[in-house]
Length: 217
Image 1 (cartoon, helix red, strand yellow):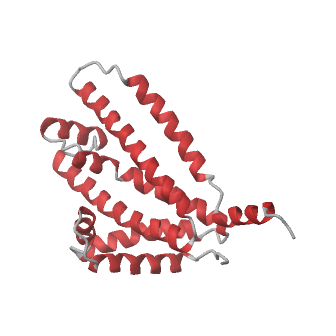
Image 2 (cartoon, rainbow, N blue to C red; image 1 turned 135 degrees about the vertical axis):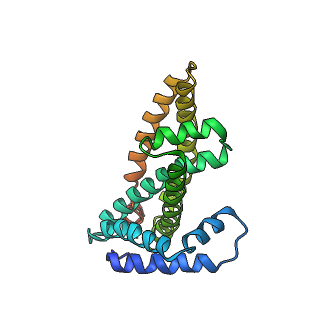
């Protein structure tokens, strides 16, 4: 199958169709709850449209398959990182003063209430766009291998992010943090891993290499 690059309008149209389909799919999980938040008000959905179109415009601006693939991968990393704080607060059940300290660290110019609202909105937008980006990569640009590797990257990134938040709280509470060296090592490993995944051979290159290595009769 020949894989063709797609313009930003097509990428956006497919994304909107995908998110609309997910809106009506029956799923008993938290992702469904966040998708529904996207459609709570016209303003929220319009904000997502503007946010997501910016990403798709960047991907579609390079009308070359390999370049689009790299740009979409970069967007997926950006979206994954934007989810980090909200995911950590939710999964680690961070409450009380610890939650306030973390929100103050990431949103120093906002009070706690405004920071919480901002972070929730950022998560809803990023979460919805990542669903679309994953779909575009897997179903249209034949990038299943990258998406599988991205899941493993996500797990390692969230381990790093949890440790980073522990360091922030240790500073806020004037406590020692003996794992700081591990934090630096994990950050270095994440940078290297991200670079490797960005440069993963695309499906077209892999198929071409397979054909070249195949025995000829």
